[in-house]
Length: 65
Image (cartoon, rainbow, N blue to C red; front, side):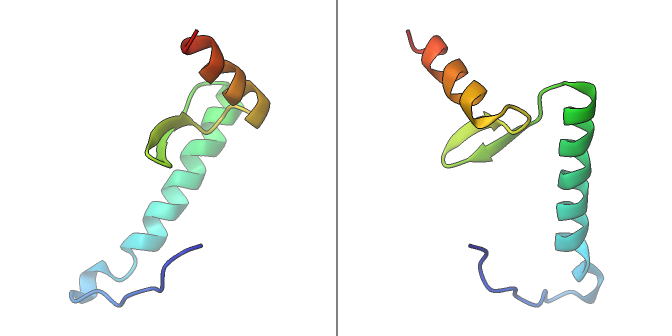
């Protein structure tokens, strides 16, 4: 769940949040299209968001064995 949007103190920074979200979405789409990894920080871990859930869990268990 996203936190409540806060209006920035500087008027020049109004669109930064939306621009970062668009850039992240475009980067993930490009990574999926080119079959390259796209890492993000999620739940206190670095995760490749291009992997499917089952492939992600399989890669985690293989690394820890």
